[in-house]
Structures are given as structure tokens and as C-alpha cells.
Image (cartoon, rainbow, N blue to C red; front, side, top):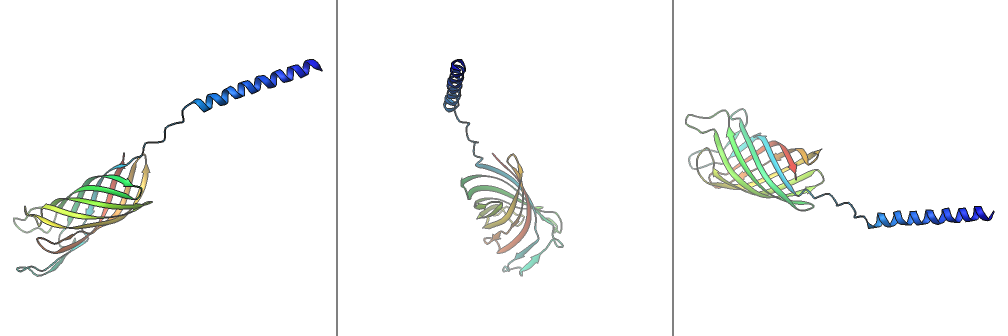
Length: 191
């Protein structure tokens, strides 16, 4: 009986010693680093103008433009940074092409400009607004400015990639008051 008690206490002591050593080894090993936040964002958008209202000028009456009149394609490339869990700052370049319904001597490149904007994000939803500054507008090399707004929903694809559906609504007011609405598809990547 004495031998078995000695063996049992020796085994128990050995187990406690080894168990304690393992616990100490686990405590002393560094914790895995948290994943690096993906604060930067790039995007490419493709939109089709659903309708545009052009305000009256001294030489032209107001009018509506739909895809039946002119097929207008909008492209955007941009970069942004998440500065708060719900706020992203972005700089977007926009290029607008009119693919049909052009008159003689009219350029297909209707507009190009930059949009510095702020985007509110909440889960998959986003809404943003900012100034649209155009170096080319109305198919001519002339400055125009306006206000850009977009709302949409994002569908994450994994590994930083996502697709989104959005509605964009710029209002231009320097050359001619205009309001446009365009549904858009967005591909984006967070890094």
C-alpha cells in the first residue's frame, strides 16, 4: 500500500509539474496579432442615366432627357478611407459619355470631374454626398459645379471584395441647372 501511495503521489506531482509547465509556456507565448484593419477602399462604378431634367436658359426651354432621347453612360473610379466605423472620406473621378442622340459636332465625352465626398456607412447600407467639380460639362471644356448624392447597399463577396447597387443623383448649377438620376453598379475592394 505504501508503494502505491508513493507511486500515486509521484505521478500526481509529475502531472502537476508538467501541467504547470505547459500552463506557464502557454501564458508566456505571445497572443496572435489581431487582423489588420482594412481602412482603405477603391471602387469602380458603372451607371446609366435614367433621366435628367435641364432647367431653362435664356436661349433654351427646360426639358427632360431619358434613355429614349440620349443613352448616357457614367463611369467612376475612386479611393477612400474609413476614418470612423460609420464614416468614409472618398475622392472619386467621374466620366460621362453620351452614346446616342448626339447632334452634329457634339462630343460624346459629356462631363469629367472630381467628387470629394463623405459617405455614411451602416452595415451594408451607405449614403454619401459631396461637391462635384467638373472641368468639362455639356460636352464642352467649361467649368461646372454641383452637388453629388448617392445611396446604396453593399453585398460583400469576401476577402475585401464587394458589389453594390446604388442610385446617384447629381445636381449641377453653374452652366445650367440640371438634376439627374442614375442607377449604378459598384465593384469595390478594401485593403
